[in-house]
Each structure stands twice: as C-alpha cells, then as structure tokens.
Length: 150
Image (cartoon, rainbow, N blue to C red; front, side):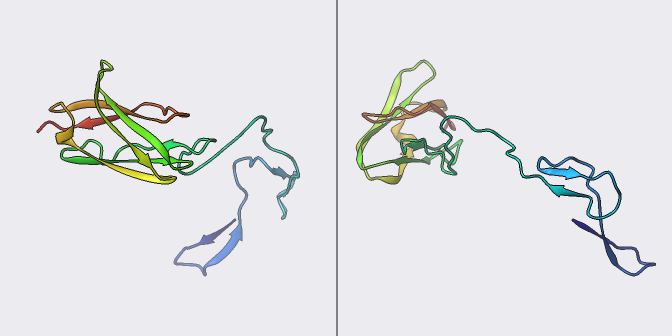
C-alpha cells in the first residue's frame, strides 16, 4: 500500500507505509527497512464438515425462500423462491396465532419463481403476517411481512 503526500508546498510523492494492524497471513520483520515482512504460507482457517455458500441463500438441496418486497406493503408485494426442480409447492400465510389465512398452491418451475400477493386476498386489514414455503421434501423457515392498514 502506498500513500500519496498531498501538501501544496511540496511536490507530490508517494511512499510506502507500514500498516498498524496484523494481517492474518503476514509476518513482519523486526526492521523499518523495506520489505517490512513477508506473506506466510499457512492455512488460516480449518474448515470441517459441509460448508455451503450462496448469494441467493439457496440451501444445499437447492431451495430458497426470500423476503417479500416491498415490505411493508399496501396494495401488493412480491415473494421470490427457488426450487431445485419443477414441482408442486405451497406458500402458506398465517397470523401471529398460527391461524392459516391464505395459501397459494401450484406447480412451479425449477429455479427462480415470483408470486404476487395482493392485500385484497389476505383476510385482514393490516398488521403482521408470517409465511413459509412447503413442498413434499422441504419446509422453509418462517418469514415475516407487514401489511399496511387500508
């Protein structure tokens, strides 16, 4: 890393700096001469078991349920979910007591699916609702949405 000296009374020059933190893969020499240290050839983290990562929040079996948007909503909102293969799936909507107030069931395609939810289809004026995605092999976590009173 270099820092540019930017003083009006001097010429602009750049010079190396010494970082005041300890990077995880760097060993500093006990000198102020360049180079200040060297990269270490070490394993920083030991990972055991199954580790998966995805920007889409897709689980290891290929399922994902996303937060509705917009949230809160007044007229309608969208819910996106991902399925590993085309299959029957159900979005279940329920209130804070667990009472099911609406379901959307259908045969959905593999990959990204989007469902539009209209406020008029929900049997409540406003408040908090919960929803989850269910298939024969998968039940998602429960997500929360807020419906704005009309």
